[in-house]
Image 1 (cartoon, rainbow, N blue to C red):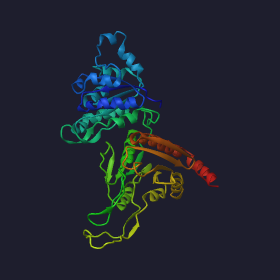
Image 2 (cartoon, one colour; image 1 turned 60 degrees about the horizontal axis):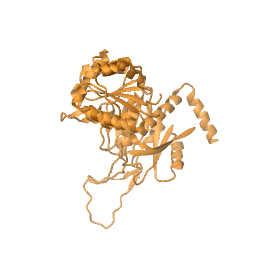
Image 3 (tube, rainbow, N blue to C red; image 1 turned 135 degrees about the vertical axis):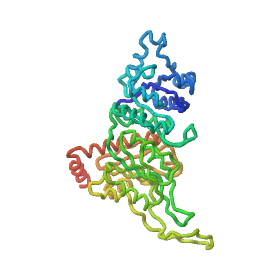
Image 4 (spheres, rainbow, N blue to C red; image 1 turned 180 degrees about the vertical axis):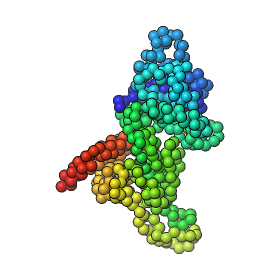
Length: 419
């Protein structure tokens, strides 16, 4: 899909409208020109003055604007746009779009444009789960409307649940630039099942202490969101992290490597793509003390044993999924990554340098990706944006491998390389 440089940002009347000035900034940071179109209800939550200041263009809101409509302004706008994005999209807006109603400028534009339509719903979690809203969602998805979120979390009403608008940076990453996930008309991974492991594991020493690492889970969670946006059904096997579960994703919480191994294999049947992004502990205590170890001796030794290798075990499965590993290294990145790719018989591996202020705990990352017959590097960028690019690449490689006759061709190419 071509880059989306001209974006109509439709803003409906929900409390999440307060986030839209930041969304405009994020879109413009990625090179987009943004024309804001507001509903009357949206004007109760955010001012046109603010949005004009951050977008650099006069805000449109009135279908009956005499000056603009003298030249059929709504048609001109509809043809100008590369993409129409509605964020937040309320239950009312979703209903109007599903029924084809056009009582205002924003919904009229949606009917009059040939540009792809993307919406980011935001509403109370009870409203979102209402059968009428879900029926409208299904109608819109069937027509090729791409739906981002909503996320699960705390809401303005004081309750918690699915209904939060996806954060501005994630929305901007999903709809702009050369790394856009896919054709909005039909998500490329629709109907595919993807499993992603995320975060660290904790290996108990006693009831108080454990062995772990600095993984935040941000990269894996961003990839889960990007995979869902690309149409996939996503299972997220997560170690202990402080992150909100993206909407529409089945999250399974685990703590130790053994628990992650078990959770993975309990659900691996019918998975098309397995992405092992978790930083699983390589070793755990041979025995776990029942009570807290008291500080008595000057020295103490703990016998460690290997934890089960989740990635290798999945790669070894007969007729198993397309398997993607991660390699977090402090040195010899390419050498170690390619070695891991070959030894574990993976389809792809994503390698990143870690250390102080690199990789772990950061919102940005840079990676190199390797597979049997190629490689690709991605420069430093926000993990939300990088996730979109990685899911796009993984999806392309998976679909290529799944094409008739491709498995044999790839095997032949692999033999040639090793010979």
